[in-house]
Length: 202
Image 1 (cartoon, one colour):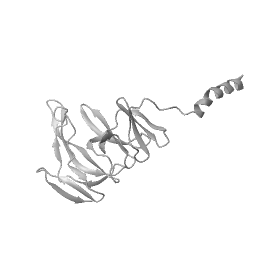
Image 2: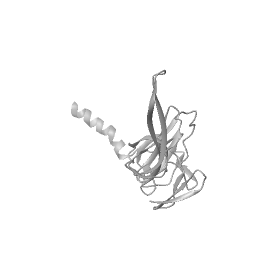
Image 3: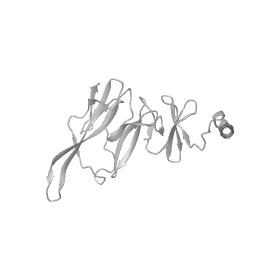
Image 4: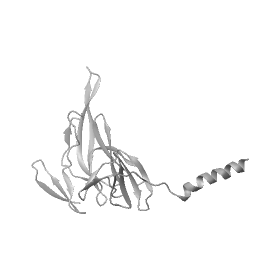
């Protein structure tokens, strides 16, 4: 009897192995980057390989970037930007090509990787005292503009000094501006408070 059940189970499952499941109802398909293309259905994105295999299922946390007059999430250096909202504040991180979060959402803003580097705004928290009346710690928040590698390690400091912020959705309704940009593999342009640029070799 057991062998008979296994036989019929195999017959039922056989077509599933013979004929891969079609991916349909797609609203948009991006060009391939690093062997993966983003596909959109509704407000969610997934990723397929050049063989049409779905490798990252539909999700709503990937960041859409402007690419060649189009907008879609993209992998660079095997990393794709994701965003997570906490108490009304957006925090950015990265997933790998399997969809696993490899750099937790923690940055106030971030770029896609470019030749192995990404520009991020790293948040720093300093406890500066204690409010005895409210029984709460007094915390000062600052951020620095840095570059990181695909492992999340800091490579370059782009800010000359920290920028103070009030970490509240009322004071920070959108991510702070990233003031640097890659010009090529060896040069970054950094915009100062006077909206003029300085050049940094990397």
